[in-house]
Structure formats: structure tokens, C-alpha cells
Length: 219
Image 1: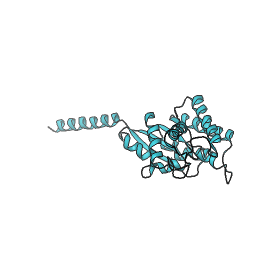
Image 2 (image 1 turned 60 degrees about the vertical axis):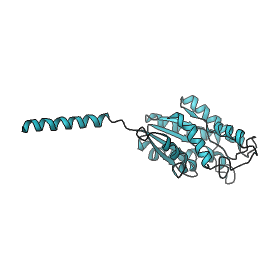
Image 3 (image 1 turned 30 degrees about the vertical axis):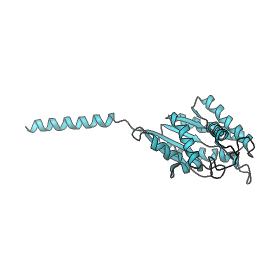
Image 4 (image 1 turned 90 degrees about the vertical axis):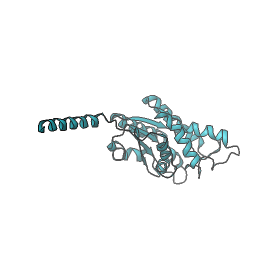
């Protein structure tokens, strides 16, 4: 009887070990960016909206956004805020401040420097075995006719990211195009804010929904 109990106990222990090894961990996705991504985990932010749409047993979504960040800031905190968490996928959404901050304080990022740091971030993420998804920057001003102050510059940086995605064979989430398409269809009064943003840059609920909707097919 005693031997039978021991055998049963060992069998149960073995089953437990096998079950624990067969448990599939959810895919860890880190969203890496600036204040738009920082707000993505607050209230009805785009990351929280995605959490409602995606199965939590299959996906773990983590925000790693800091307000005011540019591509250089992301490069500096890549190890501590992203790679140390061992992600399966990293979504990069940066570029707004690199262009926007050329105005006023003139602390933006030159185009060539922007691409070099961005490419270095991609290389480091891939070297750590994670997939990377690139996002083009959305808007700085919502006028659909190309008359926002930095439209030409933002388009240039967005195209640079498209080129990097092709070069690195990384999936591209073209938020710039998604936003422009939406503005063309819905911003009939050609307003510079209030359609997808609260202040020309930061997203309102509709803007967060658009980002979540555009990103969802990648997961």
C-alpha cells in the first residue's frame, strides 16, 4: 500500500512537471516610444485598447513610452527598458519629437542621425532574438492638405522608416498613411486638431482607436 502511494505521488509529480513545461507562455510585446506610447497604457490609450482585443493568455502587452523621447533617448534606454524584459516583439513608435522639437527650442534630430540611431536600435533588438515592428510617425497638425508646418519633414522621416523596414525586412505599421487617409475622409473642415488629436500631436480617443485598429493585424 505504501509503495502504491509513493508510486501514485511520483506519477502525479511527473504529470505536474510535464504540464508546467507544456504551458505556453504568452507572447511578450513591448511598445517602445514617447509620450503617445506612455499614454497608451492610461485610460483608453491604444495599448489598453489592444489589451481588450487580444487574448491575455496569448499576449502580454507592456508599455515603454517616456514623454519627450526622441530616437536617441530610445537607443540609450533600450537595454534597461526593453531588452532586459526579454520581449518576443518590440513595436517602435518614434519620430514625432525628432521632427516637432526642431521648432522652438530646436532640439530635434537631424535626418541622417535619426536613421543611424533607428537602425542601431533595430539591429540590437534583432540580435537579442526579438521581432521588431516599425511604426511611421502619425501627425503634427491634422490638416489634410499638406499645409501643417512640418508636414514635409514628417513625411521625409516617415519615408525613412519605410525604407528601414524594407532594408531590415521588418513589418511596417504605416500610421502616417493611416492618419492621413482618415483626415482626408473625415476632416472636412481641414482643422489642425480635434479629429484624432487633442493638441495636433497627442491622441484623443478616436486617435487611440485608430492606432490600435492599425496595429492589431500584426499580432
